[in-house]
Length: 266
Ligand code: ADP
Ligand code: MG
Image (cartoon, rainbow, N blue to C red; front, side, top):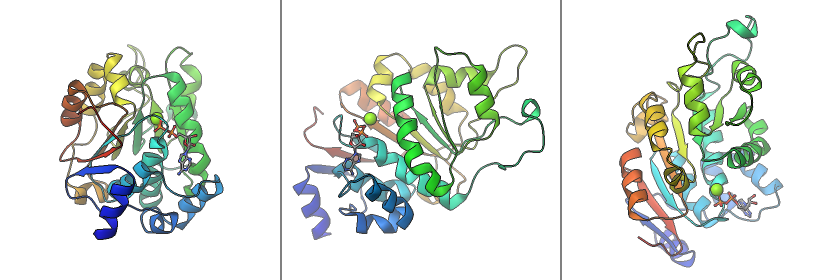
């Protein structure tokens, strides 16, 4: 506990709630993420977890909800991607890799991990980051976003995925389907939900779509339930912390632990 306090104070980490000790080194992170994913981080040439990663990893792998406030460039993406992949590795893929049916007759995609982000560029960036590590655990990752034809994204979804990175608008389109078409994504198996750049998503007016999507996800649960894969945990990442973002964080998470790195406005 003394070491946890010293690490937090050294890295300007403040926490709300009873948080597990940060994983200040890759060695310490092995017990949360497993040896292989940590090795993947080391192979990127990184020498240690960033402060937000150090504190977010042990929280996320224990099944807790998390509100993380840290400035741009602080390594938030790997802060949620690595625990998501560790959980996929532990629970296994949500649907069979080998479908005998033709692509058109396949059931909708049912990812266990869903990451929402505000723009196409961010979705592509997160997808690229995820693919650096996904192979380590055999996770199938896909990014979907608007402004491009749906066909290729539909085919990719039908092939089966574990982790979906999406803008809220395109995801909602795929969940509702068109008049003649059935949904191509169901979020009823999502046990790990991330709202990345949540402050920007609110600014851009995505709150209604996010609400509609979350309403179709499994209910929020206790950490024990989420660890057993029966309920959903939610991780809310933001660079800024003004009152409207605080309200939204409270609305979208359930008994969340809060971690802030550096100075905040709230
Ligand atoms: P944020 O989402 O907080 O703005 P990113 O996740 O985009 O930050 O990370 C910023 C940069 O830091 C990226 O280039 C990323 O690859 C790099 N990075 C991530 N984790 C580490 C680490 N542990 N050590 C050094 N660099 C890292
Ligand atoms: Mg980011």
